[in-house]
Image (tube, rainbow, N blue to C red; front, side, top):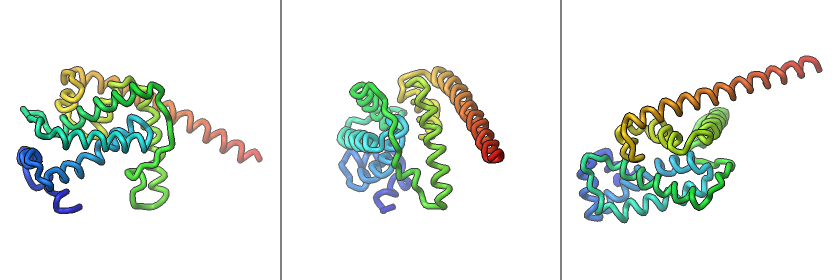
Length: 204
């Protein structure tokens, strides 16, 4: 990470935004480096298409940097503003592509350094979660991704989605319950299949 990229951790967010509004190169680079990967992964989980996620993330960050002079915190963190733009662009993309496509994921976030079997496990877990998320409602999916994969608090998610905190908590509860049922069901089916395969091998 360069000195520019580390600026976000060195100065308060208000100061970073102030510098960015003055088109300070280090501040703009810091915002790009901090939020592009997060918006990319957020988009990938929603679109399940690496190229589409890259295009959306690039578009979102470009909009963020171009409109930073119009950003006024008023108690709203920068992350809430960035992800609100991302969500609006995601809605636009989904409207243009009504049919959601399931594609093979080629994601740098999955292919991290480590033993090959660990990378495979991460990929399988990612695919399982991604598939389960696709069965939730659009807003439930947004809540889960923003809360647990982007690590945003309830208040920030409420601002992004334009809903009350109590509504977000309710959506989170229902979404988690649905995910738990789906993942438990998948695990149960895999256990049965594994047992059946083991029996077949034993008989032969």
